[in-house]
Image 1 (spheres, rainbow, N blue to C red):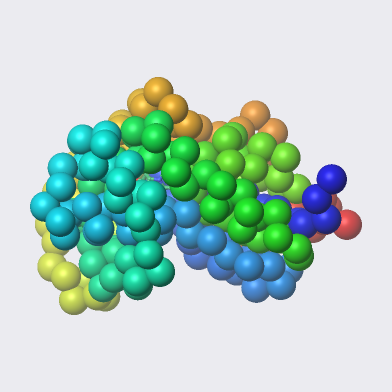
Image 2: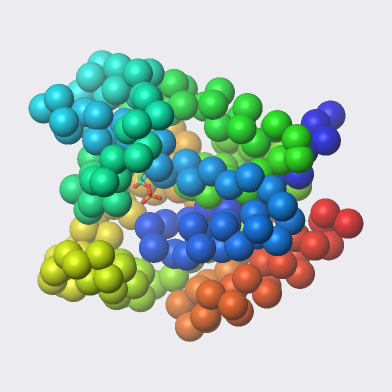
Length: 211
Ligand code: DC
């Protein structure tokens, strides 16, 4: 049995996973892994070489050949990259290529907070605590549009909303490791909540499990 404390934070795009995961990691002095970043890094690598994310073999090669630098690409958070990551992440060999890295990261003492889509269900089914965040697509699109504005990227909110819905459908509908709450996860709807309120709810739940 691993001595690591593992906290899984799953949910759709812009549900608040990253913010919550970082805060929990700080609070419990754990490492943090944004697993979406791995799929995004594979997407950057693939798009830069002109590849098609729908092609399984090309996508798998991009995932297997990930380098440290891909994770630092300035394009990592681009919407186009998010969409490509969503497409390539549906290929089972891509997921298989990234699984061991995520599990090793989680199991290394003192443990970690991982955020993603399938952490509580597939990557770390034995996690110490599992949280699933959700929020209406409209709320999430407004958050994403604001985030883009802060980065100096102008966006049309209706388009962001449509892309969000497309991504939700793809991430939830795929055959392997679809986005869904683990049966034993605490689900928090963040629609009307501030980041502090979400953190407080998550903290009381996790603190009871960490002891
Ligand atoms: O969380 P994000 O928006 O950075 O993730 C980008 C895409 O990567 C997401 O649309 C689906 C995929 N992903 C995944 O399939 N599994 C994960 N654990 C994390 C992300």
